[in-house]
Length: 218
Image: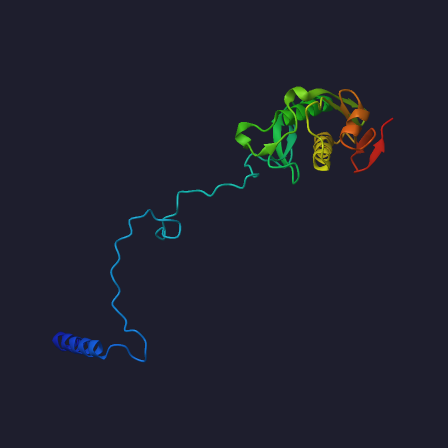
């Protein structure tokens, strides 16, 4: 392969540099200067500067209301509890499993689900979920025919807004209607359906039905 004469090439480069420095700016544009060498970057590589083929070991933070513990449906020895984000009571519910005996009756399963909901999320499920009362707020649960009766002590529980009232209705229905044998849900406040209806701005005792209807309580 033919190679250029290195001495001739170097001499030509020196001559060209001399001519350009004597001419200065051309066409009104400032003459370009050689870039100044910058100090070596000693900062820690970011995701953008991580060398190709070396994945970053930092995992992105999960969304605040997404948990790997969520389950879409319960197994035979489980019931579901439902939570929304702690930032507010509006939005989608997230379902988590709680263990029960496979031989438990529907009434026992309902009681376990309501009690678990009022107790709140488990540590492994995250702290971003909301429950409106506490475990001691549950008075009783009963299943009479197709109707679930959930009696809760709401003393000290704020239900002053329509969002809060709607949230309580929704979660009690979800807890009850996860069981196919239950088609009606009667909520009570310390034994009174009328007191519950007044607290949630319904104005009367109302029975929730699985199909989404509400009928006056007998």
